[in-house]
Length: 249
Ligand SMILES: [Zn+2]
Image (cartoon, rainbow, N blue to C red):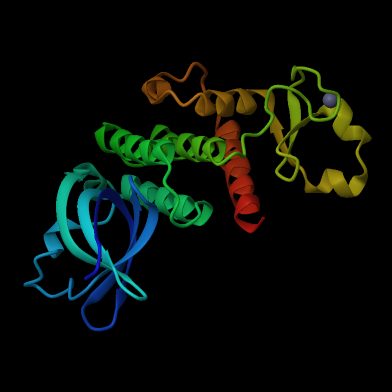
């Protein structure tokens, strides 16, 4: 007989297999990230169909077969309803799932990662902001920098990587490779080749990212500083640069 396992999980992705199956990527509370096969789940009469949906929390039961884990039961626990009604929220949910999936290893239980996922989806779900708002986008960046921190990639954003002094000058230079920023003085002393690898940023942006990394979701609606358009672009830029770097290293 196969062993049965039960756990709570959030569905991060799914792909169709064969005629009626679906392979789910689920981050679970007890086992970390799993791939679980829903046999016949695309058939109308499948009893599992209503128990799992994208970006929902479900209580799942599965058995470990020779190759696949197979879903044997699924009960929907929490659906983040508003994600499906707001195109920007849905787009952000996809970006969250993609970033999370690409940076996390396989079956490794991690309570803090679980909590981060639940928090970001709850936060996104309950937000009253309309599509197109940068504040909605902020949930994604806040999630991303907290993910970096939990995975051990917290960048040095308080002191210059080279001189070690507290960051005060406005112009700063982010190095994904070194996981931190250089002040302008130290940047100018770097070899040309090194300088070309760095991403220009500034003290405002670094302060905002530090605020994200503090991880207090309740404060997100009341960001202490006004964010200019160029700073918004810069936040998006350094976030995606760091994500791409971590994905490939
Ligand atoms: Zn310096």
